Image: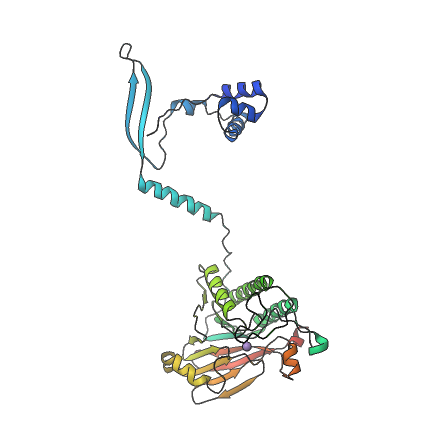
Length: 380
Ligand SMILES: [Mn+2]
């Protein structure tokens, strides 16, 4: 129950109190009101927006109140109305609606991720697959020891330069797939070790910084994809260096871009992934659980239906950093190079591989139709 009208204080009373005491807090205390209430009212008075009338004359029902009745106290001798009570109750539904509106208003203030303008690509049957595997961001390689330098900063610079060039030079395709095929981050937690075997890893950074860098790079790659392709799919495959990080990367980006209808982020927690493009199917696996010799059968079994309804199938692996390709009776399998430099471990064991990344173009009906390869030297 509420009693209206309130016996509100007049502008005159505010000004008098201030004149008398000389400070805002003193005047507020004198009137028995909160200091902030006093300040707000003084602002109104200075702006010429008096509350005198509205305060004393009007009963205003709030949005979430229901008017229930009115009581009047009057003098039986003179018939004069002395006081009026307006009885209200909170309407549950209206209260809920008001709350919903408040929440809505709050979220209106959170800047939405600006929609990336849809590129004008004539409809065609092409899909560009951007393969990016074993970036090993966070790894430290010292050129004198390994032949080439690598650290977090170099990784970020090279990946973004590479990707800008690849996006620009790749043929026009309606559909784009970013296959980030694992070991994107060199280590997976506070300790710089491989999660499965605990091998000590060489790193130049702190994990929190690595997380931030990984997110920043991925966001830019995705946005470049969206600016180039009408429809974009992103795979972030678990690697043996970053099985946990790939989970939060996938989940975080799926949530961040939940209102992007042109973008699909594969959130599958299984270490095998697929894309269907007309009669063409593409499969992905980091390469730590199945090797190139067994991967075709494993994928045909895992994706039995998709494999069965498509005519051309291609499997993509990373993990070993060197190139291998073969065609089996089931599918064409490729193991991909990386853009990253070798670490001391690889260099001491004389693992040698070309640094390279590719964009492979597939046709919905004809399968593989071409590719673009870029090495770090080409970007220098
Ligand atoms: Mn690996």
